[in-house]
Image (cartoon, rainbow, N blue to C red):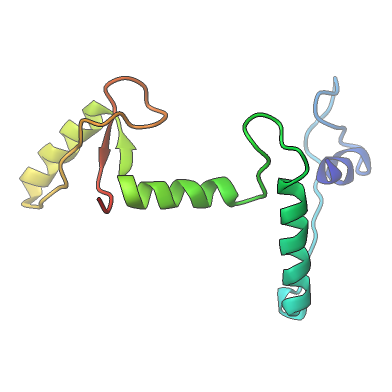
Length: 123
């Protein structure tokens, strides 16, 4: 919300959900991260802990980058979800190029619906 206000309301571009809003406002913040140091890192960790423990709604409260980090860890462990057609295409091209491809598993892959498969992973 803070960025929406800074880039929208204060620039005159308008805010999300506003009729006639151009959505073209820009807010730029430059931070010299080398000057932050360990104390700033501790403050960020404390703030993230406070946000997570603040009575999360269904689905949880996430800080920026957390969902992507969880998805990367899950994909490294379980493999990357591919649609069945993508698995067939990958197998065909791998054979054509003389490369081995990890087999697509029959386990359902999150987010792709019925019939999706996972490729790779560390299991």
